[in-house]
Length: 98
Image (cartoon, rainbow, N blue to C red; front, side):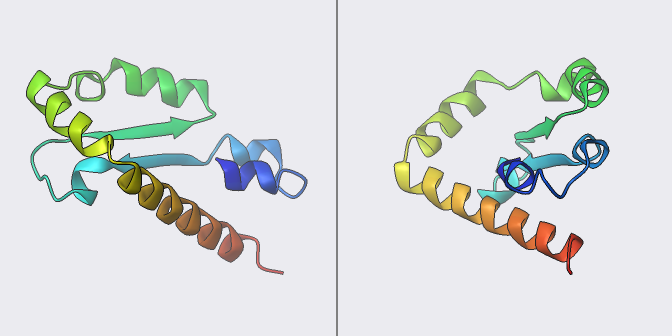
């Protein structure tokens, strides 16, 4: 949500609550079937609904072990962070074109 915070003077708070980020780590790593990802939202109702879904809370120990090794790599974290920021900036620039 860094992009939204950077443009907080432009974005009304109502819009911030309607933007939800859904990320699929398993797709980025090419691990189909693992179903590992994350949801980020400022809306408490969206967060509460996601917490109630079992697929958002259960990750097998084998999956945790495999992904913890992958995520320890500093380069992977840096590249993923840069790509995510770039995608969010591009989307926000398109949305708020002058």
